[in-house]
Image 1 (cartoon, rainbow, N blue to C red):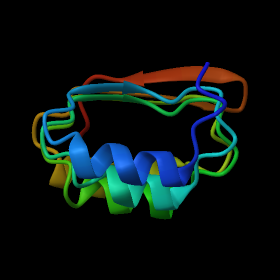
Image 2 (cartoon, helix red, strand yellow):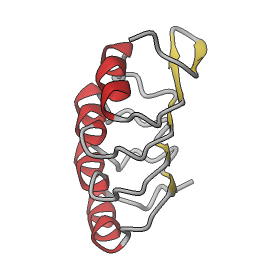
Image 3 (cartoon, rainbow, N blue to C red):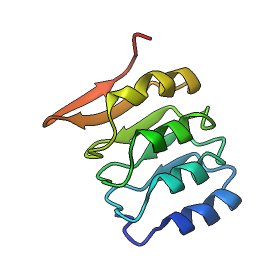
Length: 116
């Protein structure tokens, strides 16, 4: 668990983590959409797990998607404010994205391809 990490921590990480490829921030209620905006600076980020976070929403995913073009895997399970509405833009901006995992109505969903 990454519970001690905050948006400010992510800001520092993003400034010095240009080669960051994999990051797990699961179960971290201190992370908000602001952290995702900072992570967008990590242009080599391929794998991101932000599951179990009530403070992340579609807007944060949109912020991330617009610049995280290397993203291949995104886990947003148990992020109640992340909906499938963000998927078309996510896939449009992240051409290498092959897996998105999210939970909707007690069912876990895995997208390995998206029909848009």
